[in-house]
Length: 69
Image (cartoon, rainbow, N blue to C red; front, side, top):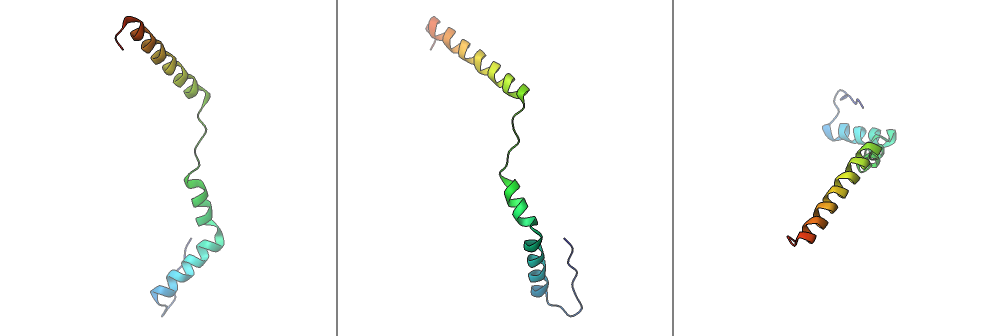
């Protein structure tokens, strides 16, 4: 968004025009909407995570059987 200062225009008026233009364009609303959206986890990452969790579970069960936990 480009807003140039007019001749003899006060800074406050420039900022007012800028904020008005931003609100009308919907840029701010879109940025706020995207702020908390997350990408979906890929199938490969889910698989790796599940394998890691299964390994950890097996290790804990083994330690319990051996009396280490």
